[in-house]
Length: 349
Image (cartoon, rainbow, N blue to C red; front, side, top):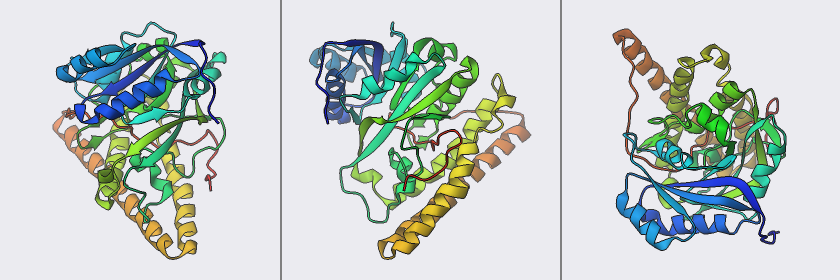
């Protein structure tokens, strides 16, 4: 049930990252969903990635928003969100992507846990909006591949290792203390690295605080037809496996690297518990369930191939005594690193 909008204002800035006029209508819808919050943000910042024409159009046509441009050497969602957060003067910043709309209670749900000083950040549930219809072969255990909350995530408020960058709030001081999102690492063209998981781990380590996952803080995330294909599913699974290994390497070279030994503990639980249960469940369903079980197997193999590719690449760089990070064109769509409650691995259904 929708809440009634009030004049109450929260000490929070909402950052909306975007990069192309192709998503104009989605950008406008996202901004409007923030305006309609039952608890209004102090400000809305639309951050544009290396697209001056889009920034000028936004300044002309969107009221009550601050438009900033990512003019750093780094393209991509990470640097673009950082550019938006740089102008925030509030105690908290929240992030929403340009292909999402927030439910009216979104801000009030995200901000409530900060009454506990040990909470450094919060995040909520992604509800996929399948624009071309959900494929019958698609297993909900892999909903993260299209930016959706997946079977296996907590159904009640829970402490979490990480939340996702398109539905996130964080203490502004803690965000800036670690330098924000890692520029050059994240959603970049065909790459999809887990910049949000990386950020959450670094913030928690530096602050000594923890993140909270809130399934009642809901955003609707558009899933276009080109992301509903089996080919995209395979590519996205490969990218996730590759990105997680690259993230682990990044964290290992930073301050407190030895404290990140269990960085991929959630992924291990997901692979050994959530996916086997889903595989068996779909087999028992019969019919289309066989296809969903098959997709789980393919997804695991693709992710494993991506992880292997990253390991071989890292080994080659070590052998040559060099280390590089690829920098490509931005795509500000959410990554979907597995989230599980601390100590809780039971599947949703």
